[in-house]
Length: 283
Ligand code: HEM
Image (cartoon, rainbow, N blue to C red; front, side, top):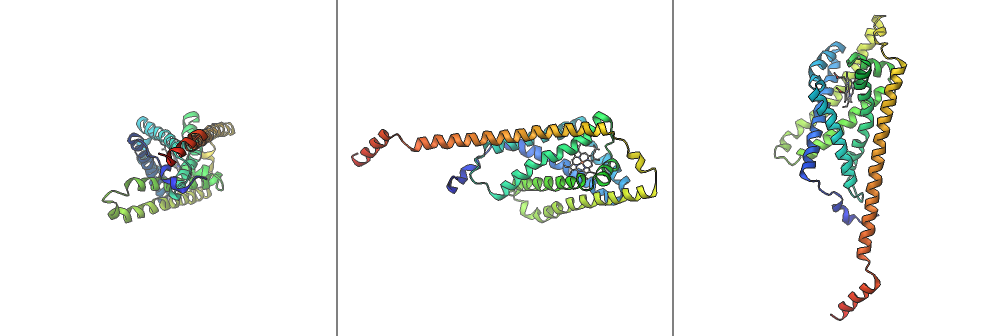
């Protein structure tokens, strides 16, 4: 293990363009998450309201520009995260930075499953993009796997976003004044989002209990379609895991090479060391 004295050298600064790109793409993703989570919160007003608000709140993200911004930002932000891991020297990582790295690394697999089912399900098989459909999928069909995974994604993504946003604005002169309000929002939005999903789930159950034909409307996805979407999701996750593994392997190899190189620099060959010692004794 390298000495802690070198910890300062672990956080090598990125060029300004990289920092700007990371902040911009992070802000785009955070805006999407905020609008999506506020939309979840509308579940408190029942399913039809939730879906009506979706048509307004998520409309910008469904346009060509919105889709390019959303998925482009996901790719760039994720790529820059991996690049930061590659550049960093893994000698000592402050706990908050370690949390940020681990949270960031766990987002892609979770989001790939949801986005594949939702966006590719729609594009490939014409499956609905509506809340009743997704509440049926998560709340009704998969309450012990799909639903908790969505809540995990929500919390992981939100905490990662809040830590990133805080580190970007904490030195602004207005930050101390706004901090209490931002802290309230940072707590309220995920709490309301989760409550909205739970209320929408109860609303779904009540409708299914009242109307025999209600559930039949959701028998839309064939087992072949489910299998195809799972295969695509699993392939994307495997590609992602391969990339993460490659980044850690390359970063480790670079660190090993650098340490070895420095060690050679410090340990002079015996003839040089002898000559230097002679010069010190007899300048
Ligand atoms: C139980 C929880 C969730 C439900 C019921 C849900 C529901 C939905 C719905 C209805 C859509 C389609 C929206 C549209 O295009 O009009 C959607 C898309 C999407 N959601 Fe969620 N969502 C949940 C959790 C999350 C979380 C936690 C995230 C993380 C940010 C997320 C990210 C996405 C993404 C990336 C899309 C695809 C957007 C697109 O391609 O247009 N979702 N979700």
